[in-house]
Image (tube, rainbow, N blue to C red; front, side):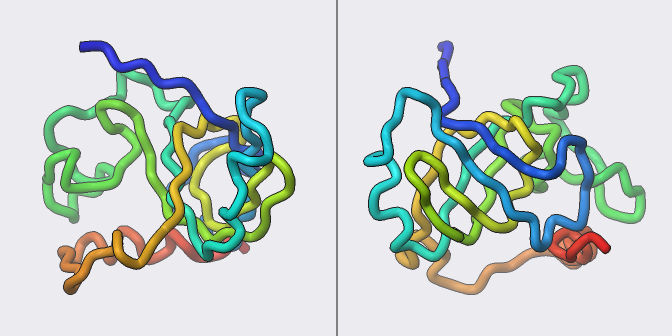
Length: 156
């Protein structure tokens, strides 16, 4: 089975190269393609957050992981399956991030803390609704907290 996806927009951001940490304070713009008019974003500014689904377009397909590895190749962290981590070297090279909505201007959505590079193809945008968030406690292993310690810090 083949699945065809086409970008609904592209990221305009200050970062153009892959970095693992310091995504805090990053402001980006998602500019919709010409297939969409301003009505596609109508009402989105009423939400505080959106989930952005995007394609890791700069990732070399040869680096994709289909089994397990140490996150960020850090041997101090356990060898876990690719689906037990949020690394970019995923089989379909798809990323998903919940971002703060800053504003909407026509066919341009401005967000904060989108960990995507300039030129990144956006596959979908969804409003974040409380009813879709986990209803119970979110559990995660200690190594994942360590991995994320500097992820959302501001780059000095």
